Length: 605
Image 1: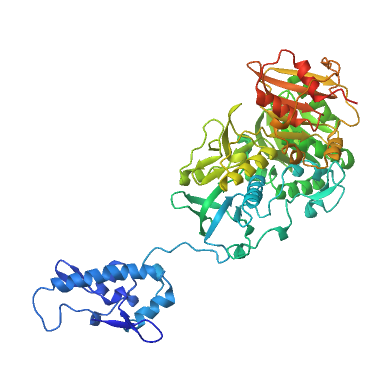
Image 2 (image 1 turned 30 degrees about the vertical axis):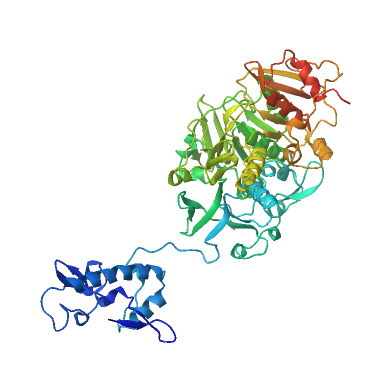
């Protein structure tokens, strides 16, 4: 029997190095050197034949019993070798006691284990994938219900969690020349704030998360989760780091879409393209707007129209040409009824933007120092830079490795009423395709939905087991004087009824934020639950339904499906969203929507 000293006191231990033992093949023992040759170990690392033997000393005949003992020992050696966790100093120490000089790296003998970042905990109770609004809302919700919770946010974005709406709204109206660095802005109500939800001091250093007293929230920025093992409750990062979790939230958001015509263009076109989504996109476009003579925005939705108005302001002061083109008949043509979409287009033009509706891009090329956009109707547009604002594609790459279902109609991870994709996995924000008990299955890409769904997911991750029923709202501002808030299904293909009135000085986004005290309106709107709103009839006169060409100062647009209101747009009417939420929740037919419009007090003052 071979014994080895495995401790400082020299206490004997069973031999543990697999290289000491021999194994049997075809009733003959093979030397470990032969075995190592089969493992393709380099010759200088193989054992000499002096270590091997063809039988038990002094005996003849069968070695079956000895072979059995050696075989079992070898099996145990393999298990022990795994147990010592492939630590090279310990391996070499174990080999040294038998005179084997094998200062080898174990990668010669087995596949390399994934590298682990030294500052990243190997296990966290709550893992949030994504560093946007939904993830931050979930983290805050988890900590509210479990003050000692330890939450790790893994974000592909290099920045700490921040709100996206100001990137296309208030930041562009700042007079601070250093706004791209400070990322601070004055809200419409005049108060200043940062786009970051919390300062760096709010977060716990990643390496301290497992040990910090009372837990906390840590952010691992600039890292991407590339693989999920749902059964093993582990994820793998792009650098090979593995993290296990108890409960996980997927809040991966989405990536801006590009136009096929631009994707087919060469690298010279791609260099002059901005897909607007993140802080760096804002910084880059702000810098470009100071250097070039012409910028073309492709897209007539929320983002495209907001950026067009923001850049149009500079068109008047700096001589910048701003062009906006899109295939619809007017701005936000997929959302607003045609008459209001056309009015909005004229409003954008008054902001200094050259708006080209009914424009479908056929190709994009470079001619000299300029970009040439060819439209399908034969028109050509020359410009210096292109901003593509044509929608969002939900980030669902993890679905394949995790075995999660992606909705074929709306995209995004399909979740149940509690936003669960699996028993310990939740999804929130842009990437969640959820079932709305009133409006059916949906996927929503707005700030308020990210706040509400992230908050609910965080509550359910701590055992609340609450269903998602809240109707989230969204808003869009075309500068400080014109804006709207919307809720439910707002699709211009649906029948609509609009009721309008003359606007006053108080009917602007700027005035609305002054009254509510917040620049991000949904922060106050989402706190009011529909069930808390008491709807009472107003004694106001019957609202006026304007004719084509009249000014749409303020009003309510109802979207109908089967004679039931499923969506509402409040045009320059603010702080009335709980009433709209209540109407959609009730799901009742209304004979006279003029009477319903009175509930919003559009004639007050």
